[in-house]
Image 1 (cartoon, rainbow, N blue to C red):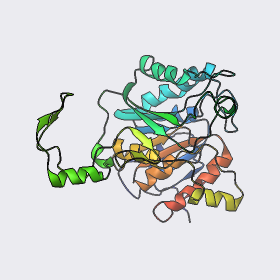
Image 2: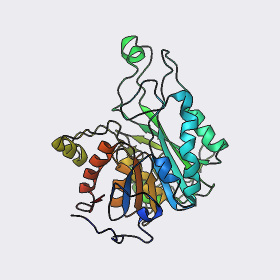
Image 3: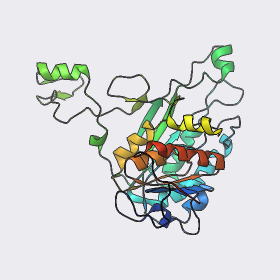
Length: 331
């Protein structure tokens, strides 16, 4: 079942996102978004200024070995990422955010770490004037113990299981509301609430007031660490799903599964934290379009770009999971 080319938004206000991309037809579109088979730089360049509320993405990392989905050598990575980031800065609203998931790597042939991802951070802040709103850390226990030479053969390093998620903003005051991402209170907090707390000043200097044990806020403020197995105040997330709808549909259709998917919990957290219903979310490295699917399910408009047709075709399967199946119009 398909929508008509003039389909109106099912939720929210504003034009359909495809109306913002002049001169290029989407590979497919849904009620709230559009996916483009293109180099995202070509699409970003035509999007109007200050029209996007959130850019959430995970570009190919700068590894010293080539991946099938393409990746740039770390010596060229900073300048390469800036070719996208200049337009990302331009198209963000003044209260908009740019969330970047990026992983570290080892130096080729050595048991020492590259600093390329820190150079990316500094370039975005110092060259393009992004503000670093906050650092997040994603603990991913599904990561393989690589490089094997140092971790499993010589055993002189431990498994690299953390990736960085940096939240940048166009101004020091991006839109954000942590009430939308509250976590269930821990058992200890529930017990403390029932027992009560005595007002005091800790040795650290922190004031513990009589309101400290109250649970009227409806949940605890999460930490900035995403972890697969963690206390309830952390954000539980892994990326080794083998039985989700997307994977099953890809296998049934004989279509290659994207090898570097991130879990839905990552974009879901930031879409909730940083946007309102009807806002526009963009992913310039769409891959299997997890970001678009999450945005659609949360009633946000979205745009995604991907340069590999097979990955983009397979990403349509994700929308089977959204609102009993989002209507897709292929071009």
